[in-house]
Structures are given as C-alpha cells and as structure tokens.
Length: 525
Image (tube, rainbow, N blue to C red; front, side):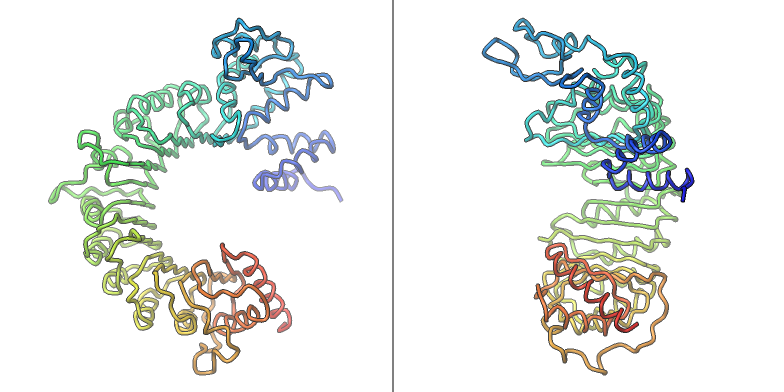
C-alpha cells in the first residue's frame, strides 16, 4: 500500500521531533521521492556545525577531505590553537595568527555540484541550538566556522538563510561577531546564555542593534547572564511583536540603582507581551500610589523577588487576562503571603495555574491561612511549598477550596501519612496529577485500607483518561515485589483511574508499577 505525501511528511516531522536522524537518513536513501520529503526534516534541527563538515567531506573522493580541523605542531612554531584548513593546503610554520590562518587556509572551495547541494541542505535548517561542553577538547571549533563557512561555500548571505530559532551559549572564548554572523531576517526566537562574567550593556546593545538592522521580527527573546535590560527600552518599536521575554539575571551582588530599569517603562513599551520572566533585583518597582497600568496581553508571569517586591509590582499593574503566575521568593521573606495573595486575586482574577516556591531556608513558608485568599480563583494547577505544620484537616480544606483543581504539587520537609492524605485527595473528582511528600509505609500492608477509608465507587468524569502519581519525594518506596504489588493494589483502591507513575530517582520501580497496573486492569476487563 502506498502512503500519500502528506502522511510521509507527518512521519518525517515526527522523526525530526524525536531527533531520529538515523531513520531519516535511511529514508533519504530509499528513493528520490522520499529523499525530497525526508531531507528538510533531516536538516531541520542542528546543534553542531561538525555535522555540516562531515556532509561537505562526503562529497570528496574516498579517503580525502575538503575541510578538516588542523591540530598544531607547536614544536614547529605554530600557534597553539587549532584551525580549519582545506585538505590541499600545506601548513607552514609561518602562520602565527589564528585569525589569519583560518581565513587564508580555507581558500580552496568545494566543486560547484557539492556547493549547490550544500546550499540546498543549509536552506532547510530551521533551528540551531549550540551549547557545547567547555571541558571537551576542541569544544570551540564551531565558533570559527560560523562566519567562515558562508564565504567558503560561496553563499550570498548567512549560513542558515531560513533559520527561525537560534540558541547559543556564549562562553568567554566566543566572539559576539561570530554570533552576529548567524543572524538573518527569518529568526523570531533568540536565546543567548552568557558566561558567569558581567555582560556590558554595550554588548547587549550591539546584539539588539544587529537584530534590528538585519530585520528580525522577534517573537521570543531570552537572555541569561549578569546583564542590564536597559537596551530593550532604547528601541521599543523594534520589539513591537515580542510575545515572550525572559531575562534571567545571574546576580552575585546587588545591582546598583543606576543599572536598574523601570519595570513600568519596560512593560509599557511591550504591549503585546504574552510571557514575562523578571528578577525584581534588576528593576525599579512602581512607586506606591502611582497610576495603575493595564497590560491586556500578558498571560504568563514569572517573578523572582521578596513578597514585598512582588506585591509592589502587582499593585502597579493590572493583568486582567493573566492565566499563569509563578513566584519564587527570596530568603527572609516577611510573613505577608496572605496579603500578597489578596493582591493577586484582585489584580488577576483569571489565573488558572499558580506556583509559589519559597526559598528552602525561609522560616515562613505559607500556611493554610496564607492560601485562603486564592480560593477566590478557579485554580486548576497549584504548585507550592507549604509549612510543615500542615495537617490532614488543612489538606481537606485546601482541596475543597479549589473545586477545579487538576494538578497538585506540595513541597514540605515533612512526610505525611500516605493513607490519610491519599484518601482525602482521592475524593477530589477532577484531580488528575498529584505529587506530595508521603510516607508509603502504611500502604505496604494488605489491610491498610478498608471499606470505611476508600472513596465511594462513583466518580465524576474527568477531562483526561490519564491519571498521574508522582513519587519523587515519597518515603519508603519499595524496589521490588511483592511490596510493589501490594502498594499498587492499595493505590488503585484509592485512584481507580491511576495509569501513570513517575519516580525520577527510582525509574525501575515506577516502570514496574505501571506494568502491574496494566496487568491488573487487563485482568479486570
């Protein structure tokens, strides 16, 4: 039976999404028709230019290379750094400058047939995610190829003319110029992670100016490093279509006030923003009593700071269509989380996903009282660090306060009694995914549950047929039968729709539990 081209395209897209280049390469060799379909998927995503060098050399005669990385012979006075050279170039000791040798050595172009084919392949690349290991020998070889290969291949423009996603880790040895050589108008997703040193505002300005000059219409921008976000405000019109902004500030010391940016000015210049991550340390918060600014586009907000700073930000803005809110509070947060939650419900009544992670050294994690104001929201997902004083009654009040809850993740140094807490949670009809630190010991006995503790058999239907249990923080998780089977049977009494188990630190036990679940459900059928 012959498959249509649309189905083959779906197959190749699926293989590309799974990074299965071996299978895609096999499809390329099957027939000319499949080659035309599979090649764009094969070349869609890249993480190293060495694969391009390998392909270039595949056009060379047997046992020959068009291009290779030359390791220097320091005894002959060569520079200690390696360099890319054409195979028919004789390496001479007179080459002392790496920058000079790289440009002079790669002067012998590949044959026209191979050059045209390589140009076609490179036009298929849509994503280049480069994150090399600095401890690996030769880890910076790609850096010299970024600006060099387009010239050597005789390309009119940049190496990847239709690139959409560019992600690069700029270690200290990487030049900004090399990064800029990859920019092209089609890029709409730019992610740059800088090294641990302080990044000069001029560097950020240079990159953003190049983005504007090249004509990139950025929808997603991520910076990670010790940087100042002020260049973003200098040319706001260049980012009018920006939807996702993430500036992660790796701060070892507090920023000077002169280096901070007004968060009011920043968000006001980005009216189309859907997602924003910010560290309050890098921004000047709104003044108390100042005009409240409406930002109608923001749907996801991720903030790192003290409870007071976060509340100050929320008091200065209204985000009426905010759906997801993630807060990470610094150590020493004062006990005013209830007030913060009251502000959240008044400023963003549409929130459905909420996460609050206090610093693990913070002596004031939220109690049930601190969380009560959130009951006014129709929350579907809650991830929160809670006080170790949380009781079974508190848990029951919590789940009753969130009738739409589907995912619940609680973090605390205390391990709760599994049977008691799982019984409460099992009576919540819409809950589909839970992760709570529990001691499973009381569920390892065949008589752990009886008719008075298990929930009634009828449950309201859920939107999902997948029910997940996360045991990463569970205590006394057994590693083998028969205790695993006893645990599964008791869990199925509580959660009849249980089908997926996660245990990051004991994947073998999780896999065996899923096998037992499938076997027990098959037997019932």
